[in-house]
Image (cartoon, rainbow, N blue to C red; front, side, top):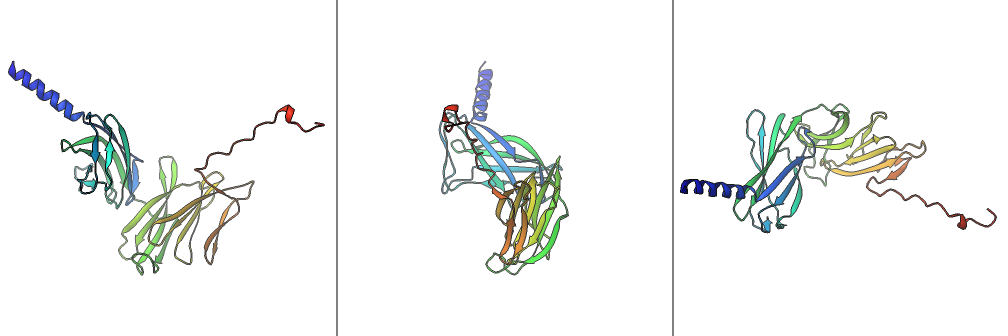
Length: 288
């Protein structure tokens, strides 16, 4: 009888330990180009019954990512901490978006599985999330591929690089990517998504006098996107323009860089304009 009672107590303790956190992992998408950062969202529900503090100056890393290739090869784990403490209230829920940059999981081709492990600092244990699957593939620069030199004022000034623009189909959506490659070794230094593209209008792609890359493309009907990439491989600016009554915007290269001519500036994050309310009959001018 004592043996069964002890076994029951151990089972209850194990169940209690597993219930400290309810953790969920979600990826922004399931297919990535080689070298593209993986964006993951980790959601944590604190079921421990007490407030928990994660991170803080000098604290141990509280988030570990396990990455396993479909062949069974285990990649080096990615550990993430935070300088500022994060408080998880008892019974509360928190979500954190993490960018796994540097090509951690996308430097090799293949299929990978990711699991997020979250630290419970009181017990010192990590609690695993669900397992997410992702695929890494490669694509040739089928839209643009031109060399340039990194100007003074940027990191690695004087190095030879290549701007590459890639048209890539993800399921039923055409996506436009930009990639920075090393001219000598061919290594991918940065790969990032510019957004969906409508090929009803051919994208305009040019390098200006300061070696910045300008990409102007139709993002969706009547909405164009102007993306500017710095020579160091970072996205400098992304702005949108709207076609107004057939006055389609276009990109014109100038001595100072580039200028969008035609159309009107469009902010996709701005709230829609309020429609004017109809006037009452009593508000009509005299004689109408």
